[in-house]
Amino acid sequence: MLLLDQTKRMILRLEEGKLLQTHKGMIQHDDIIGIPWGSEILSHLGITFTIVDPSLRDVLLEIRRKTQIIFPKDIGYILLRLSVAPGKRVVEAGSGSGALTTAFAWMVGSTGKVISYERREDMLDLAKENLNLIGLADRVEFHLADIYEGIEEENVDAFFLDLPFPQKYLGTVKNTLVNGGVLGCILPTTNQVSELLLALENHGFGVIEVAEIILRFYKPVPARLRPTDRMVSHTGYLVFARSLVVPEPPSV
Ligand code: SAH
Image (cartoon, rainbow, N blue to C red; front, side, top):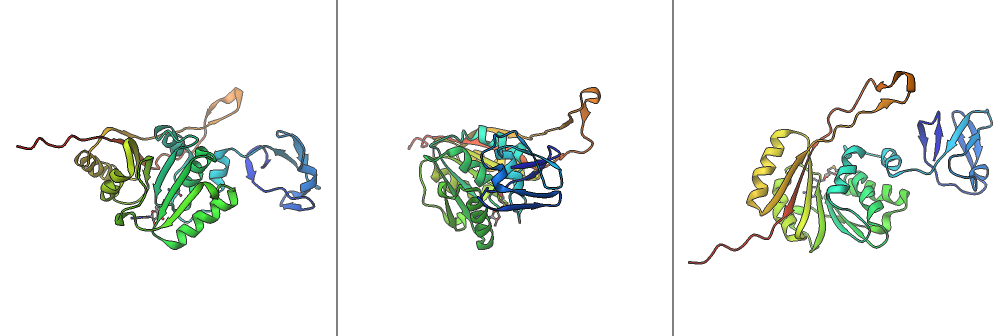
């Protein structure tokens, strides 16, 4: 990844003999290959670029999108709450542009699996294309399907719903999750959170948490340290719950 003014990102795959054209001049790929991360390089116009390896956040911000994607600030906490780590099997619906899919695929490693359901073919194609570009497509099984019809997986570690009316799919989620497994949902308004909360208890979910992630950036100027002028103040509410083993009512 090249950074202009240490802020503007350009992520590219380096290939021998290729030329990178930017509005601040040209750079030969060969001049970048082999130099250490953190180095500076000059374009033919003498403009300085910094070379660093892209972080997961950098990759997420570069994703081509046609839907609202989940923001990195929310994804960070989702990964923690769903315990997404090497070897885990995680299901999500819908795939949308594939931002969350990318983060899950990054975290589950080569031994884990992400199973991603999407009912719109054009969105599924975009998510696949994004995962291919990033080089993580082999960790994802994409399905073109409406999860209302039920899904085949069982005993998965975690399930994330990013679609309207998540309460409609709690039966499917319950059948798919391992006992004690974690469900996460993101919803844009509080009334939708209330509807989901009512449904969760009726479907055998417990250990419920509702959260909102507020992230404020600062201008990194030592002498005038203060927040940036603008911030993203609302993305969505996060709801997490665990699938509980509910005892059968005693027969009389
Ligand atoms: N989390 C994604 C964005 C998801 S947008 C990201 O970070 O990029 C929501 C997607 O859910 C849409 O593409 C929509 O087509 C899909 N969707 C809605 N209802 C669905 C259902 N019942 N089954 C499968 N996909 C569904």
